[in-house]
Image (cartoon, rainbow, N blue to C red; front, side, top):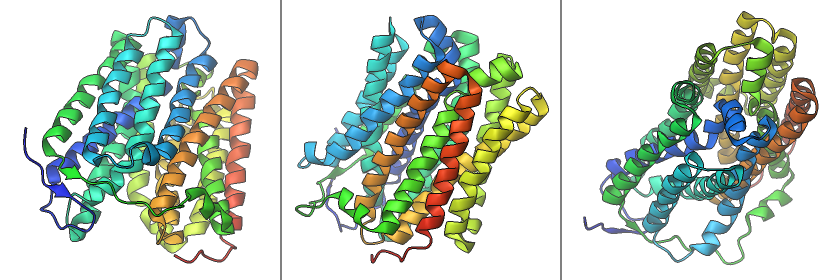
Length: 396
């Protein structure tokens, strides 16, 4: 095995670009694994003899375990080498994908989704800080851009790829296709990651203490409501497109690909609006997404109108997280690590709540109450962001 130098915080090691690229591949596999069920709800539900609402709970389960993992990983693995922790998390992703793909029943499928949740929460709570320790300070922006490229790429192709593969070979094959990708990331990280001693945490540091500041509480509320509103609708978009718009698998795949490409474009273009007016943008984004959700109800029977709305949804929903992370960096420059861990937990919990609420509403009344609830939650996010903008900034 290759000998890896021990990297402590503050060291100036040679740039480990191979490890950065391996982390980007791991991020791609994780994001694709997390959201693969969105494009495969209908066949999963049919094969496992459950409702589409129950199938959507797969997102809720993974989100719940991601919350627990992100909040507890530091305490559980406090004294462990971060290299070993990351390798264990990627190995867990390999196992979870295999379990979900080969699940004989809904219970085993949920177990696989729970394991991927643990991997997601742990990976995201560690990976950005790890990437920053792999290169000299002057190269950190480039390293983070490469790392986040895996996330962006998965956002673009995960849903349409899942729909395409599921249509050709079945949903189980679509899940299994991600297992070798995760295994490749594991092998690459094993070969390229140096040893990394854990960073000591100040005694008594509690991320929830940041919520004492009104601007932080309101900003986190805006973030939580955005993701909850988004996934109340987005988790159940495929059943809507199949039953209301009447799309076949090939057209659905094209629509999802268009959504992903629009999201990639939105992420590339969001920087200027954020620089010109951070809070104004954080108010506008959820309000626009709410309008798009209502537009689905009005134009859902029209394929051209629905296609335009899909592109708008992808553009807004994929670029918005950049705004919330920018808000975090500007609001908590001295507590970005603690605030980041708190935000990971809040986002995952919100995805869980949104998928759960959407499933209950969709099973009870179909798309109308589901999409109306999504719009209401998104508008509440806009209000919370507006209120946060009126509060004094928290000292960094």
